[in-house]
Image (cartoon, rainbow, N blue to C red; front, top):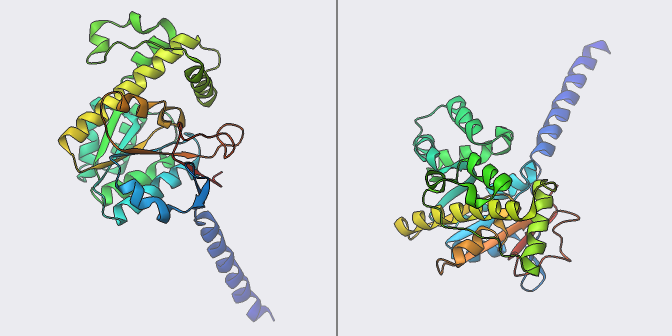
Length: 285
């Protein structure tokens, strides 16, 4: 009996390992709420609509791996549909653009790029790694959208007026308009960012600086690349229609779509409106 027990154990271990691999790469839920009519659709159903847009915002909670997988699936679907895709990242500053270009060209090793990533962002590289690799393998342009964090931190602490002309650069004046609708939006954004202790008006100004800077960078890219569809990877507080899209809409007439992940207690089927998002990705953890 001992002669047969070892192969049986090995067979069991191999089967168990395969099950672990399968489970870790389980298919992502493609149940998506189309907000306009309340219908449950799939990514395949909406990819044509997305491909006809110049901008596709796909929101996230930064630490959720399933949200990043949904972003990657969206990029893959658009690429497969033949859309000339680019990817814009909240996670990189505009001055990191040369490094992003070098990564796409294959001129940087992964360890070098990972170091550049951590100079820009403080969440785990592994969360975004598959998106970066897919972009490099398929030569998809990457765009750094953000301003230096020191700028937004200073605005959040001291207000927009505290910025020097050098810090403002090409940013326009921003003022926080506090009507009831925007008040509710910013409060939800505060909850998403975990900044409940900040002064409301100054956080609002910092949010507008952030959103405006990213909108300007996107518009400049689209002026030079009029056929592109840019998938924007950013937190849901920036991706909502009242975030970066609102700054885009105030400056240009461009078709865009917003996809948000469902977040229980924050963004759900029963509380999302068409004025906030076009699609809600359901069943993500």
